[in-house]
Each structure stands twice: as structure tokens, then as C-alpha cells.
Image (cartoon, rainbow, N blue to C red; front, side, top):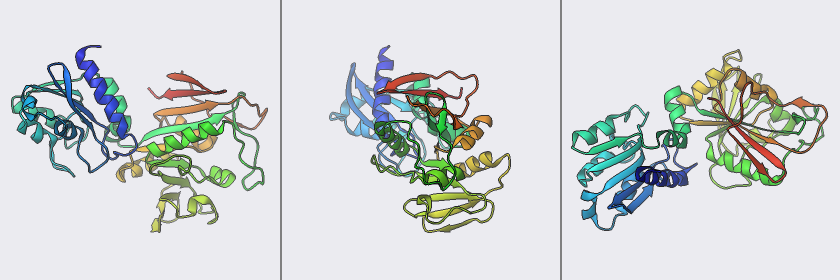
Length: 348
């Protein structure tokens, strides 16, 4: 790696510390370098707090060194007034002569304007160092602003013979068929804490009665979304317990009651596109789909997904509900966790 890449990698590592707490803002890391040595660093901790550039600059003990330093930042500095003042103004005020930026910001209020402002005040600005890694860091943020929908993650567990469930009827006494170990369920709860919304279909809500919270982890619980076309889900299920924000997608009513909201949408071939469009309008940047085969396959068939996280266990069902099928895709990563195998797919 070049020196620029080493410092940018540090920015990325710092930025990741804000995972799950910065939305709707992106994760950003920044370091101040003087004569080949990092003299200040920071990251964006949560929405409304100081941005990474501000924290990095504030952490420098000898402010005079800033005029002879280079600021590295994983995302283009903002140039507009939001919940905090523009970062470009502080950079210019402190006289930092050189700025290295990982990638431009897709948000309309910035989108190259921060770079132009810095250059307009005589700063030497370099853009695109580790660009792909910096975009991947904020995959949710970039997808939201560029595709006008949330970043969509599909998740399921399947047996060694490729079934996600044994044959069960909704309301049957038989409990959910666990395919993976308890440790992996803890990991899934961690993943839930990193996303803004989580979704299941009607059959999963009836058969498994999931809570869709993060009881085995810590952090904010995502907004729950459940499909209930005819509003036939019983009020006794966990998803309607008002313990966290829940959106019930249906064809009948649009209203809010407590933490439960009813979103009226037509249940036709464009349902998922209409839903993700509404989630975009409401500022939800990511969607974690934990539904059954029908819902998961619908997202795949409509090419409305960005990432799939698939666990394969060691057990066999022999027959049951077949796992979703991702055609012509190879996993980008494969990890053995205990006796199970985790595969990650990305929709290129």
C-alpha cells in the first residue's frame, strides 16, 4: 500500500466504529498527518454529533501544525449547514493546505460542492484514494442516494440438503426448526442492530411469531415491517405488541396507532418496488429481510437486493420448504463458523 492508502485505511477503520449509530448520516473517519505522523484522528459517532473532520482537527494538540499538515477523510467534507456547521469552513479556517478524500459524497447538498469549495480557497485536494473501499464502507448510504431505495440484505439459514424449514402449517404447535447454533443467532441479532428496518412476510409472522428485536445484542432495534394484505394477523402476535416501531403493509388502511403504523399499498407485481420507494421517502437506508422462501425469492426474482447472507447447517430435513435460489451467483466470501458455513453473496 502507498502512504496515502495506509492513512485512508486508518480512516476506514475509524469510520467503522460508528456502524449502526450514524444513520441517516454516513460513517466517516479522518486523520491529520504531519511529516509522516498522525497527529489527530476522529470519526463520526452518531447523527447530530461532530463530524469526523471536526473531531480529527480538534484532537490536534498543537494547532499551528495544521497549516503544514494533510487531512485524510474517507468521504467528501460537507459544505452545507445541517445539524452541524460545514466541515469545509473549519478546514479553510484552520489553514489546512492539503486534503485527501476517499470518495465524493452522493448527497445532493454536497455532491462535489465540498471539493469545489476547498479548491476554490486554494487547498490541494486529491480525490479517489481507495475509492471502492470507501464506497463499500457506506454501501447503505450510497445505495439510498443513488438508487433511491434502502440497501437490501437477504438472510436465511438452510440445511445441508437445501431446505429452510420442515413442512409446517401456520399456527401449528410445532416450534420453529432451528438450523444453526445459538452463537449464530447472536450474530444475527448483531446484524439487526446495524440496519434500520427488518421485514418478514405473513406466513413467517404466523408460523414463527418472531419478535424481530435484538434481545441477544445491544443497540437500537430496527423498524419492523410485516406484510398483512387483509389485516388478518392476530393482535396477540409479537409483531403487534407495540414494543418497537412496526409497519404493517396492507391493502386496506393507512394510519398510525402507538408504535404500530399501517401502510396501504397495492399487492400487485410492483408491491416490493412501491414498498422500498416508501421506505426511501421515510429515510430508511437499509432493509434486512428475514422472511420465508416466497418473500426472499420475490426480492431475488425482481432483482431488488444488494447482499444475501446464507448459513448452511449440518442437518438434513429430507423434505420441506426449499431454500431460495440465487441464479448464476458465486459467493464473494465463505467462512466456516463452528460446524456451519456462512456464505455472502453480492448483487453485482
